[in-house]
Length: 419
Image (cartoon, rainbow, N blue to C red; front, side, top):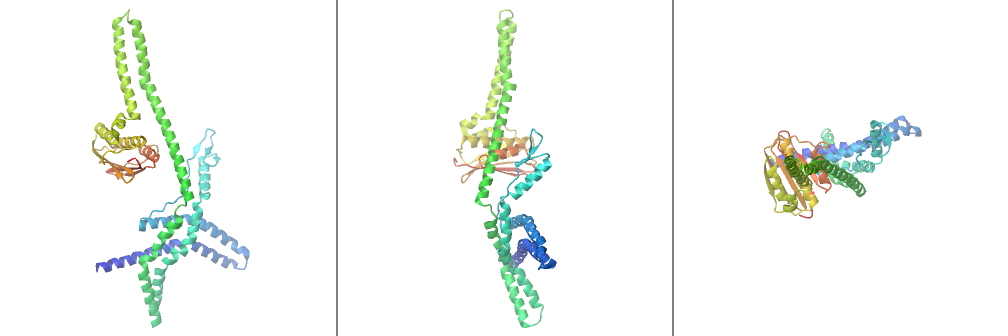
């Protein structure tokens, strides 16, 4: 009985999905049919009567192709868990120049609105994915659409056959019902291979996207490097450099007062010693911010354990043995963990956290979880966005799961052959 119920459910779900595939795949052909009907209604013998239907076909196809393809991707991902990358070109940033004009990557415009509008249409019409979508809207009705019509046509034949008298009509109705029931669980499945074959980005599109991604990563790395250099210069100028200048002045004054006022000279020497100690501490702190000595001496795992001891949290660190990584990757992972633990204390008000470093074939996977209040969101210019850019330089990924009320779980994955 249970098997019968599962089979009936499969038939019902398959029939509904087949109907959805028919509707989605036939949207563009419906536009073509409407254009033909309009031309015939205006007068099939008059050539000028077909101008408006031709325009309707062109405009309707271009306007409906991208929504249809997005719907097909959504259905395939929802039904089969097969994600098909869209491969559409993304618009770049719009920046205002010193002249007051706005640059959108193609031309200068007087206002930001004009720059965005011009950029939108330029990106849309120069995107090779448009013609891929148009091609797909012509292929899918003749492949997946035709096959998906079998169950609805079988049901229609059954209704018409059983609704008419006569043995022949009843045989037609029974045959239609059998065909509909037998094909319903499978008729919609052709949409997946067709979509994967004709909707995925071409190698040229993938290469172009990769070039754009690497260009953006290089720009981010350059900006981050310049910001880090400015931070180091500022810390040296405002901290250690100012103290060293004061130290030199104190020593020069003490040298002049050594014979005339020894007590005052001794006081200046004591102050100079305190200033030298403070300068040394600031320089050590600055060096730890650039490259922690424990990271260079003891490796990533021990450095994370030492970091956990300095955080105002109960942090549990687990690792798959000793991980041997390239120094740039070690530094990125270390400072990423430090950023996440700092957020857990400062923003999430957590009491406990867990850090897990593990191997995943050729990837390094780092999971940081805390019991804070959750609700962490990635914002432009924020710490999480900076962490994502830092990992993207190494083709790493960042996944954030932080529902309101917690817990917050962050997963960092970096492809690394040095494991």
